[in-house]
Image (tube, rainbow, N blue to C red; front, top):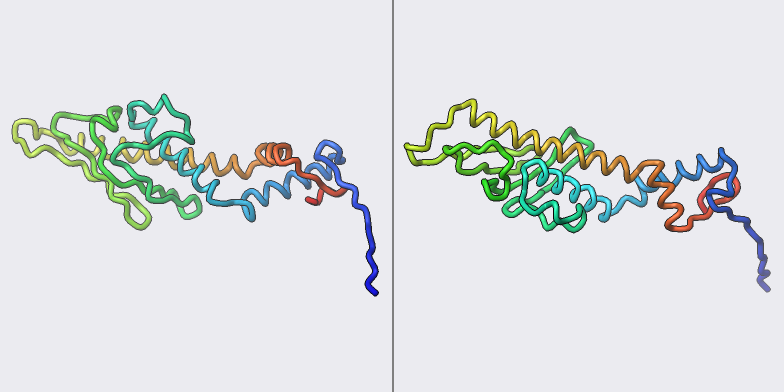
Length: 191
């Protein structure tokens, strides 16, 4: 006949652990947040920060009425992807105009800016007017527009990187431990 053995295990909250065990517990949760527990929610959060930051930099109207997580996006622009591990890859596609990006250095001769996401970069094409009376944009002015867009995309990538770093930070690990009422063994091992 099978025998049933019952053992008791003592578990602790983070605050009840010795300092060295607390450090181990936080590090374990931090590693899980960046590994086993990294999921589509985290990917979405990083993307949301990137889109919102890009909107801030190009001056998208109405963005200040929204938070990062509920921002509806930039009309005519889509975030196609990003990669924090292989260089500074952020892939936007669509059309920037005076309406959705008023903070850019628009000149009379510039009609729009086309963003074409490629595998690991974005083509930034400054579209000039066909009207000879307003088509007076110099190469330097076109370059300034292109650089302004690239600077805004870079800022969005930096903000996304900072969000990913926060998600895997010790501070966020502590918040996760508290919010999820995680328990540990005496040595700081996750129970």
